[in-house]
Image 1 (cartoon, rainbow, N blue to C red):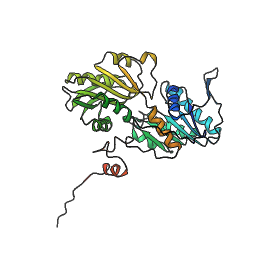
Image 2: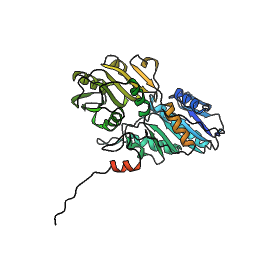
Image 3: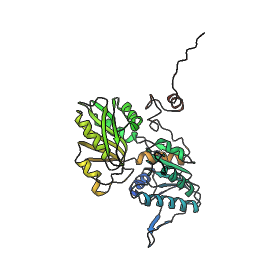
Image 4: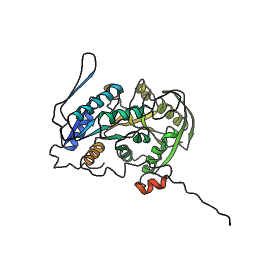
Length: 354
C-alpha cells in the first residue's frame, strides 16, 4: 500500500467534511492525514427535510466532502448536494466531492425507450451544486467520468484488494468475470496475479435475476476469484458461484468493491458455495451484514493519498490507477499516455497491388 505523505505546512488550509453515509471512513481518512474532520451538524426539519450547518470557518479553504451515495441513495445524494451548496456559500476556495461509491451509476445509457440516463443527471446535480472536482472509486462504467464538466479523479481499489489476495498465496488460481462487461477489470487482476482468466456467460432476466448459460474458460480443479465492482441482491454472484462449482471449481472467493448488499443478499451469501466475500468499506456494513463469510478492507489509505495529492497540486497518477487499460493487452505495466493510445489502436496490414 502506498505510504501517505503528510503535508507538514498545511496550516489548516485543508478541510474534511463528512456526511452521514459513511462517517467512519471519513474519520479514518482524517487520521491518516493528521487532521480532524470538520464540525458539521446534520439534522432534519419536522417534515423530514435535510438540515445542514458547517460550524467551522472554511472561507478560502480547500474543502473535501466525503459522502458515498449509498443506501438510502436518495437521502445520501441530497445530503451531499446540500453540503456542497453550504460549502460554496461559505466561500470555500475549492470543493472536491469525494464519492467512495457513486450511486445511480448503473443507469448510464438509454438502453430502452423512454428511460433516463440517471448517472448523467446526478453528475449535473453535483456540478450545479458547486463542486469543483470529483474523487471516486471504481465507477460502474468508466465513461461516467465524461458526464462531468469538472475534473474527475477515478481511483481503482486493485491496490487494496489485489494485495489481500497476493498475501493469501493461493495456488492454481483463475480470475473469473461474472459477465462479459467485466472482462477488462478481471484481466487487470489476472495480470496482477499471473493467472488465467475465465468468463461467465449469463442472461439477465430482471434487475435481480440472472441465468448462467456457459462458462468460458477452464475452472475445473482451480481456486476461483470471482470479481465484480458491486454486489446488490447477490443473485448474479451466487448463480455464477453455483455454476463454477458445478464445473469443478475448488474454493470460490468473491471479490467485490462496493457492498450494496440489498434485499436478501446476506441470506444468499450465507447459503452459497462462496468461501469468502471480500469487499471494501466504500459502503459501511451494518451489524446484520457483518457475517463470518464477509471480509471488509479499508480504502482509506487510497483516498487519503489522493486527497493529499489533490490538495498539494501533485499528480494523482499512480501505476495502479489505470490497471484495466484499453481494449487489448492492457493492465499493470502498460500505464500512461503511450500505452493508452496504443491500446485504442488496431494494427492493420495494408497490401497494395502494383
